[in-house]
Image (cartoon, rainbow, N blue to C red; front, side, top):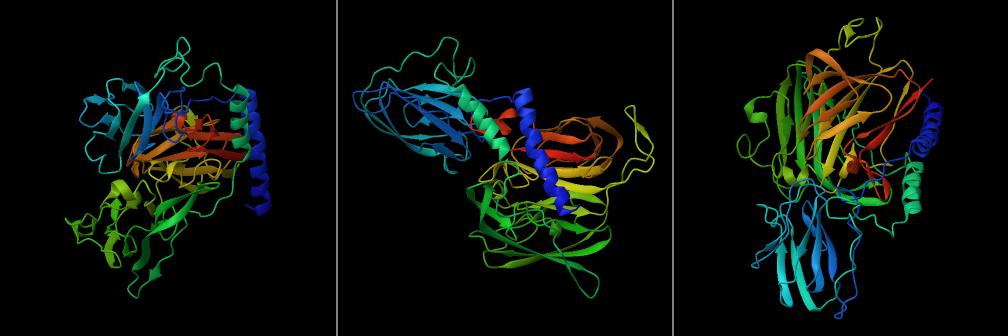
Amino acid sequence: MSEERTVGAIAVAVVALVALVLSAGALITAANGTGGSAPALAVAAASSDAPIEVSVELTEFAITPSSIEIAASGSLLVTNGGVAQHDLAVVDTGLATPMLNAGESATLDLSSLEPGTYDILCTVAGHEAGGMKGTLTVVGTGTQPAAADAGDDANGGHGDHGADTDWAALDAAMHDTILEFPAATEGLGNQPLEPTILEDGTKRFELTAEIIDWEVAPGKVVEGWAYNGQIPGPMIQTQPGDKVEVVVTNKLPLGTDVHWHGLIVPNAQDGVSPLTQELIEPGESHTYAFTTEEAAVNMYHPHHHAQMKVPNGMWGVFLVGDLPMPEAGSVIGGKTLPEDMTVDQVVPMVVNDAGTIGMSLNGKSFPATAPIVAKKGDNILLHYYNEGYQIHPMHLHGMPQLVVAKDGYPLDQPYWSDTVNVAPGERFSVLIPAEHAGVWAFHCHILTHAESDEGMYGMVTALIVEE
């Protein structure tokens, strides 16, 4: 594809996406879910100059704000903005919210507390140690906040959208964020990793684990944990029967290993320290050696403290050979495949929803996600990889996806679907016939993973089909 055609397609993407939103009306979703901004701070004047009500957001693994000052007789509006269950407890007082699922909220009444400073934390095992702790300072005597609009509550009604909502601003936020797509950012993941070929034909790949600055979205630079300075890490590609060595050098501040998720390897090469190997200490290297026996659609990532490293960016794609396709000309679900069917491009799509990277596709958050560009009549083989904490229903507008493999294993009965549900650790392979020209939205259909009061973000891209 020429550079001119790609640039033209991207320009079409911007115009058409805006037209799509303006004509159909983008769904505006309250930012009480993961990745949205913290709920608006609701305060009422208090004689102590401390607020009578404070909004608190729980995420992996933080309480925001972690240092809270509130007037006596006040309350906390606590929202779970993470993906796992969380609660908020005031230590040694018996006060705690219920256990909250992602996106849920609850009010914690503090009227029984005397002025003073208290410790707060999430009571889920390991979450306090992970950083979910802070302090609550109760001061003076406050006045009650104004009554909420009738019909509003923590989990229903209009949520934070009351009489004072600036609806025009919500429209503008959605419109403006879409106009930014596709936005340029520093860094690009999934770059093919070229091996060194040894004398006996072994393909040697080199990976370096390190902490980097990574631009997830325009102007949003986070601490990323990466392989070879990119998120996702470089794409490793081999053929069945290849002898493979992967040399892993650790430049992290703690030990590591690499697990070849889904790949069939000898037990000693499985990458689970200390069961199958010694930990790769900081400054050290370790070589994995195995033969890739059969076609595979797999991932690689650490197993040692994966709960920290993987959400922050340490994952990559490992492809072996070519995935067998359904027979050309066969009839599946009433649709006949072309007699001359070919795969014109292969696209990896790694989804994430936590850590410093957050809601993202291939390490980027909309509007910095990369569009998929194809010509009408092309066939796109897309591999989904879920390296996140929760399931993601990936929905493509305009044309169905033919699900041809699960975890790299071809399906005896492929099926058509416009939404493919991908759970953590799973891989799904879909064949997308680019039948209809236009710009087609492509996103996770958990709407708070794609939209917020600040506009479109996170797990959204577009499939651009050119005539």
